[in-house]
Length: 238
Image: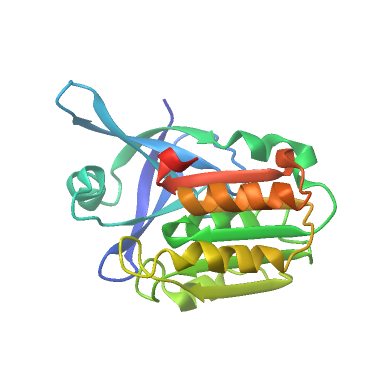
């Protein structure tokens, strides 16, 4: 399996960490793909805990890559593994994964609609900064998030937005598991409705939102083969 050395650790806020790695061998990826990190920690069945992390960095520089993770109360890999990684430590991973991004037809001419909820900002940021997209002027990107301290700092996010992007908007929503979360789907549909018939769409984050908005775009006439999805949680909803 591929390996990579940790070369930089940054703490973005009280719960989010940004890790920069240097692969120990040639590693090519497309913006929006992800890797699966093997923590080496064993579960009750003796199998290793493995977790998926989006490649936050752009694919125009593949001699390094970044991931961001949010510390969760019950996060075994984050709390017992990633939190303890030191500079020069080496991780083992598989990937990159994300098959639809390898399809050249997916990146055809036409409007691009990107919608990410919560921590799925990572894959969406990498996607809009990919070599295939960041020169386009017809990309609209929406990040639905509860507050500025939830994941990556808003100022950091703004600095990573490609200058040629047609539209970028941070949409405030209720935090997952809290009262008012049911309104997120209504907001997402309202946003999708503003884009009559995008050529390509990437939907990432909450599986309930991802699934419903994908269905809505298909009803509007968007080719299902041109809709990419990355589900971070609520996976049973897709």
